[in-house]
Image 1 (cartoon, one colour):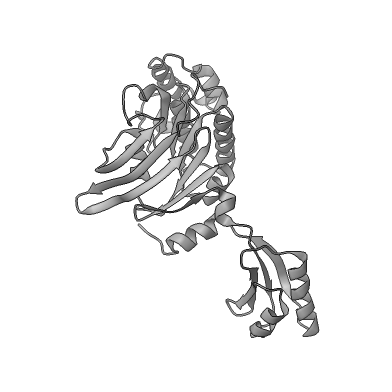
Image 2: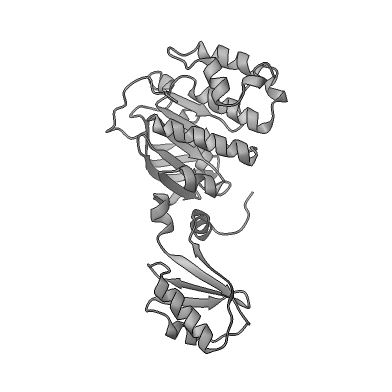
Length: 315
């Protein structure tokens, strides 16, 4: 998908935020947040409900004014006249009139841009050709999301903001949208998205920013955040001698039983390797213990997210 209409100044980040503060009365939604979204990459902003991610994106889009701090988008002030034609925005709520047909909406929207993508091409690309005459309110949730994404890229933007881009989609539509986002990145478009789907962020993002209580708590590539460490898990009779197992393991390995009969072995700052696996199975064999459901699991972005933000459900 060829969307970029103008050359990009690669030395300028897609988004640069320093010390952003945004308050709603007595509530501080964003509290001194600092982050940079690289140019030509997919940056995922993650956080629990109320963490400040949507407010941060809305300030970048120019819909809200910052109370303090500096925000630059493509090197410009958010919402400025010069910036608007260079940025595409996909809102979670869509913002599309309920009675307007999909094809008509994109046609009218295309007239606002100097070099829009062809409407017919967009409808086909996003799987909406058969729904071109269908009012927005009668589209499925997935179709509404895809129409909103098509609207965000119709002007060939350099940067696209996506707020929960696959919310309400079935698995097939979600994978299709992931492919489309990958095509945007391949065409040189910078993408900043917020999502609650950790798999989505891990699969799409070049750069991940995790925020909580209005502050950045971690950022980096998915690989850097999850690290190389893995876990070896197995089941056996409850109450095995954990201290004895640790003694038999290579240096730096830890073991625990949680819950009863479920055992986890991991290496601090390292990865599960054949030597560790052999040590565990040999220790079990010496004690006539037959481990079941033995498996090696890698640490995921969801594991990191829960460790940093907690496991309690927030509203």
